[in-house]
Amino acid sequence: MIIKQEPEHFFVREISNFSLKDSGEYAYVLLKKRNYTTDRAISAISRNLKVSKKRIGYAGNKDKRALTEQTISIWKVKKEDIEKIRLKDIELEFLGYSDKRICLGDLKGNFFKISVFAEKNELVLAELKKQARLLSKIGIPNYFGEQRFGSAGSNHLAGKYFLKGDFESALHEILVKDIKTEEGKKASEFIDKNWKNWKQCINHVPKYQSLEKAILNHLINVPNDFAGAFRVLSKNLRRIFIHAYQSYIWNLSLSAELEKLKHFKINIANQLLAVPLESFESKNLSIIGYDTKLDDSLFSRTSLKLLKHDKLTVDDFKLPRMPELAAAGDKRVSKVFPKQLKIEKKKDAFQVSFSLDKGAYATVVLKALFSKN
Image (cartoon, rainbow, N blue to C red; front, side, top):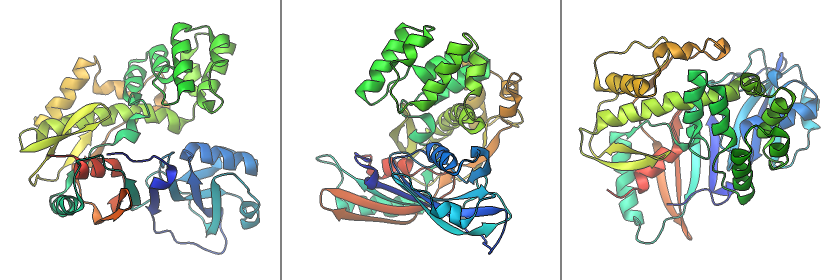
């Protein structure tokens, strides 16, 4: 199964329900982007408007290599300011005003339309439609998808070191990673071999890796200040690594519960995880954090076992050296039901469309749909 050969092969639109007015402190704008992370798009818009990024709110991070649509709020700007913006691969449509900032989680779900290029001998259309009906009926494990773990599938490792207070090792995971481009790979290899020679390292980082350059610039000015180098990143970006580690624990803990059912395996972020072929009970399960109340269930026991293996405790999520990132924990439903799941054959690809509740990952649905039992 191959997806995302081009951004046009992966379309996602937020499903929201905002009340708009003719005036208000916040302008609501539909952001349409191509081949941009949400954070990078927000940065480009803030530079163009000459306002702080902190004035721009959004409900969720959207894929980079995709066509995406989401509503953002911008404090103290007018319709005329929005209409003047011209950015490559970004389109902005003024929607109206509100007195409320859009915050993370302020959405109902997402609609997806994805082209999937099936390899030879993969499932035919009739089998896929049968599988789709089954999955829509019994549900799919609500695993966190690959996007949660970054392009190299290693964000959770940076998060682990972050929780330990080992900021140098965490930064090493971020700066030395397997990038898909040849230019990125060469930069990673050079940084690994020349660790702490920051002036040489920055000259080998590709232009598009602006965050890596910002980290290295800080280390050039203040060598060995690894905690300070992390603070160069926005709070939301730093949280990504903590969330990735929490997601890693949650995925493996859910998989341990599902192993007792008849199942097949799907690969997410280099972990083979169980997907049952029969119905399983939907539960609200704990995303581990400092305020998590764990019980004697297999899920909880697995979470604690994984923490202990990494020499961590729930108290480490208080992050005493960066308390602004403290993670109390949360709940996540164990099963998701794709709505209006449709499959059509389009030339050399299958076009799959469906909607999901917020927090659920389209790539997990596709893996469950296209994986052979």
